[in-house]
Length: 107
Length: 248
Image (cartoon, rainbow over all chains, first blue to last red; front, side, top):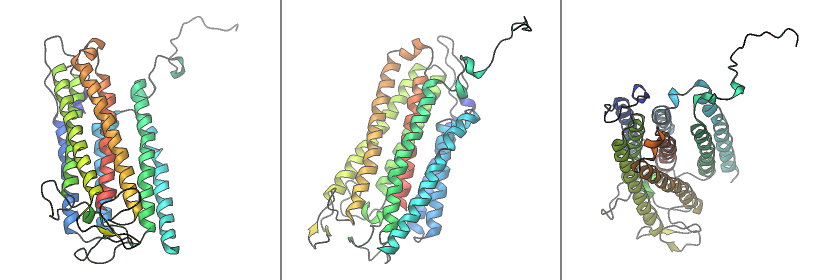
């Protein structure tokens, strides 16, 4: 983000805020949430609906972590140090949802 | 060593100190790793919800004919369908949508405070921190209402397994469906609400320090950034709670 450059103001001087990128991210998040809302009221329950929700959630997570938490502009090492461990979460989701389905079958 | 050269070379090895690993300060790096561990905790809670939901019976009838029952997992839009001052109307998900909007907005004001910190603009940092605190407090207020509504329940109530009518929910009984649904609601939104609460406290601390000129004297506003990371994470978790608890 160009807005995040480390510029120091001389005493008494005021640098103009650079917030274009921030508000752009805000609108993306808002529109994604609005789409989720519209879909919640118009689409029938099913796999298609769930996959849209999941896709939009991942998009929102990407913009929050990337732009708001600034991870996109950190070093590659830090980015991977945060992203790679979430593989364990993906694994846990796969395992426990499979397990849930199995429990449902024997109940 | 006999063949040692006399030319002094500057040792730039990363192990010699003086270099920040991954070009991030100690505090920021540790905040990232704390948030990663916190993400695991929230994942565990949400995955537990998924497991319970997948192993329970799902409601298969039409939405119009839906009624609360212990036999199947509740449909969230039929549980969370109330709005303050509009008692008795079926307005699914609007209230939680407002809460999501409030939290996203407070995340924006937080990032604006961070941006102001980069410019060393004390007045702007104070202004945006204050708005972030207002947003966090508004969210907590909404959650308090949501909880009290969930606990109080509807006039009609719902049948428990033994046939008695019960209104609302606690950790043992739940009019909306299986007790586990209420338990997970209390645990997941409660744990998130606790994070919001401590986030508001931290935000207030940063606001207070900024207004006292602590960061100006220090020469940088990195503390705003670090607390900002935490605050955005709380927003991020809510995005997932919103999807998995309320939408799907």
